[in-house]
Length: 425
Image 1: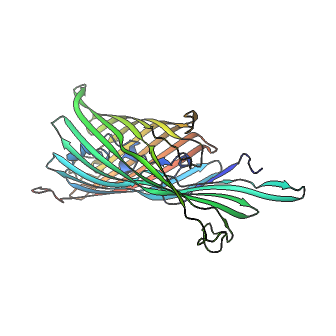
Image 2: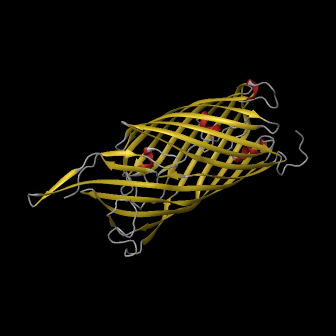
Image 3: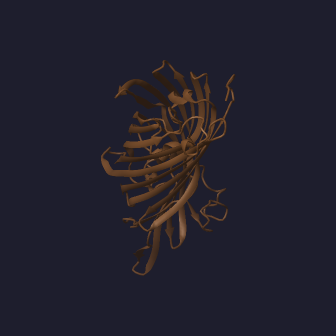
């Protein structure tokens, strides 16, 4: 028999944001899509981009003085065991247009789930039959790609103390899976693709009705739910022998690409069904110095019937808490230090991994992280350059054990007077 307990080496490659956590379920979800929130360890609910403004909270956008186009680029270094890898990607793009300090609209693109991961045997195994013939064999599993998100959001200032926001997130994209049984250096490949579709509804509320020691204590709330739970269409292709070892099905393989059967297609409905509550508190301890606290409680109540992940189980729940300190820049100043935005924070998280068949808990992955960042304003329209850094340690990951991850993010936000009339600088 060919079954045995495989000892894995984990390899990570590609352009999407990556982690060994990508092996669970349909992949690891994106957590920080812009440099400002990453630099403070924030989940994006409380202000981190500017005083009273978070790029990820539409209910704060009307506080902007200008239209902003914001781009963020991210690089990662992952280390686990004696393995390490570097990768980079565009982590987010966003256009936000405020109008008359009352209404704001925005559109953004960002990764949603990443499945970029390769797992292979560390050594070959042997199978002896007829007391003389020996086969050496190993196995590799590879997933790549993942789903992306396009968001359209609107924010509105209800009163001097209350602001609301609504966002619609459209999920799209695909991932690829390759399972390879290598017998005597010849690959036997089974390939499949998953196509994602679905949408989320996000509701935001920010209020200044509370105070502490005669200073405003800003409360921010966010509730996300699946408007249309994510469906996954799976295409499974006929297995083939990769005779020329190029990991691609062509005419040199057996059977040849033109002789292979058409892929079988099966749609799995309601595979991912998200329920997410976020709570944030922002308090100005000194002028322009803000202490912030956030809680994130995330659940996937989907069916998870398609067992196509590399690791057994999927992420059922995630809980996270972070504490951050922000020093915001002074508006319209020429002093270099006063134009700088300093950020720092710590965060703790826990991921509950469950068996999709029995709903029994398999693993509990714990996370602790340190965040540092700074930004600088320049130009008449408050253009902003941001840098964020995270050091994250995760423990309890299947086979990998402990993973240390360093994330470096660079963001550029360009302000302009687009669609803003009668505005004087």
